[in-house]
Image (tube, rainbow, N blue to C red; front, side, top):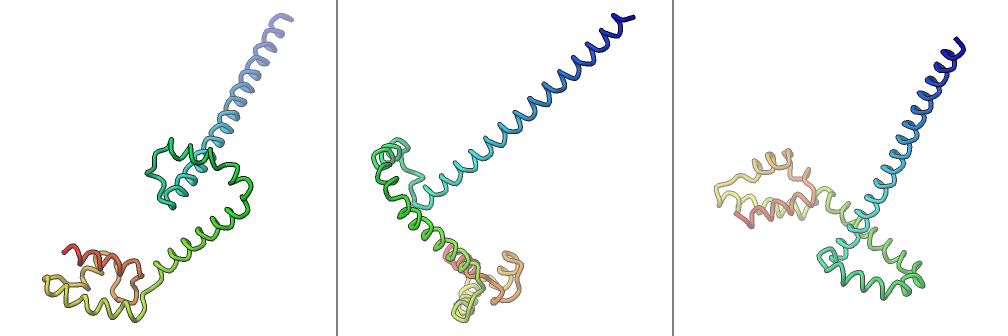
Length: 156
């Protein structure tokens, strides 16, 4: 009887221990996954910075050599480079915001001129805008969408 009770306790404790081990593995796995996610995000952001400066197509070995040779300069002037980088990113942000702004009077005049070009090509600018952008009025277009219309006409 005592042995049966001891065996049950041993079995219960073993099951609890195995559950704790599984839980610990899950927690370690979760932490590891989070670390990998953060690392991947950081690498993507660094890659985007190289893309902004049009260095993403450069040879990796050459870039590594350049970074290696210039890292001391970077560390000495980190604050200066931070300000430059911040300025570049702010300009890009403002440019993107500007590109998404609605068109003004000049763009509407351009679009009105484009109507005739579309007609000469047996196309309807209004229909194209409705189908492409789901908009009915020229003033509802963004500057970026006007650029798309112009590019489309160039390729007609």
